[in-house]
Image 1 (tube, rainbow, N blue to C red):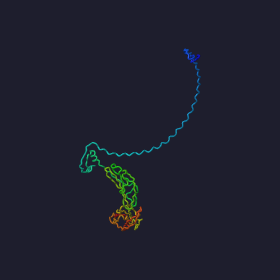
Image 2: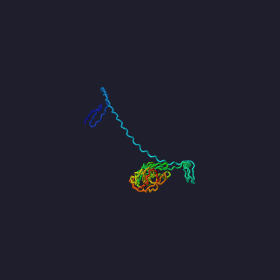
Image 3: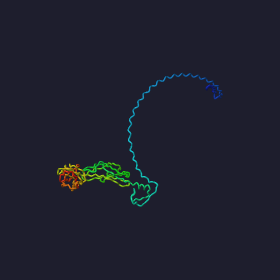
Image 4: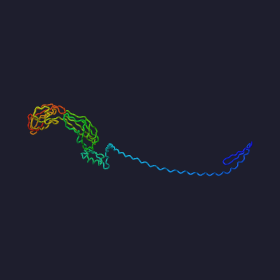
Length: 340
């Protein structure tokens, strides 16, 4: 096979390859010629001039600030919560130091605050002197009443329901707290309530249609565990009528029209009479029967007729029989007559 020649160009190097027929021997590679110089880089063109910035426009005016609204009214101050109650003071501790006194022989007499029959065990001198010089002051009621209530009322009158009780007492510091009990005719209507007066009770009204009484009581317990008490009593009474009149006999209206009509528990007393007319005294038959009529100025008997009875109904609608006594004669002078 005839030989062939090939020219190869690689970069700036020319290589000639001759191929002989049937794989002839490769010719040696020629040396690489020198590299030609690199041409110069042309100059960079000038950058164009930057245009001037336009002027800044004027700033717009600020808007007006709105006026401040009025301050609303201050709300009310809330109520203060209730103050908690102060706890009870604990008992005083024993006095320290000092000599101890013992004597089991009962004292023969009462001396100061040491009562007869007392004995002593492990008493300090402080305790002995305090007992001697500062005797226990027992509390006591000095008054007890129903507010606004009279103690004497006419038969048929009513003590209103739910009364308010008032009281006063001494040495209240020696009373155990909340030990007040109030009773109506022995039945409790308040138990272990405050010791402070007044007290509004819940209770029924009380009415009596006969001459009688009703008793309310108050009790407390002192610091020696003793009960002390006081009563309040309301009495229902009939009216006794007396005075002067030229009429005889007297009917119910005339009896109630006599000069004096007063509440009394009985007829026995001295009656003061004015001049002119018969002298009358009229009282409920339930009170008994008068037999003696005495002039207190002379101590002589004043003649009176035998009594007669008249039915009388009082202002409260209660009816009873009255004994009517009249002097035997018209007596024109004034005098005091003791009736018994």
